[in-house]
Length: 154
Image (cartoon, rainbow, N blue to C red; front, side, top):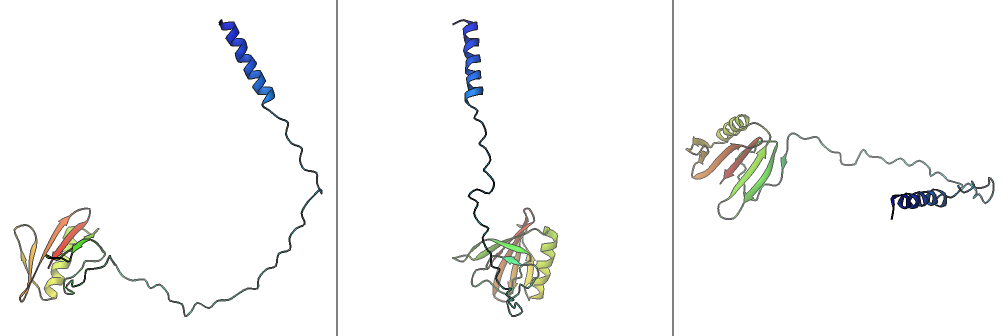
């Protein structure tokens, strides 16, 4: 095929699409013909529901996200706000928590609260703390990880 024949075919296709592919717009519906009547709408009477006795949300202080495992010692302080990351209640029991608060603030708060709860706190070589209260033993390990990750082993 020559270039002229291809050009003629292309023009023919374009003209047929332009004229045959378009339809005239449908005429608008005649006004007043087959129009449904406006429906009647009844409005319900106003209902007043008393809410004074409903339970109300109470804003609380910083929270703990998650549930501590059963048997977690109540006298080991939890820095709040914190989220429980992981725990083990089989064999060696431990709880790992995460807070956005900087490490130095978490460390000073937890150590002060541990001592106030009667725990003796001794630093360990690995950066953790050995906690003693009579015959009871526990460990606290803190590390900086997008905030503070801390772990109690008890």
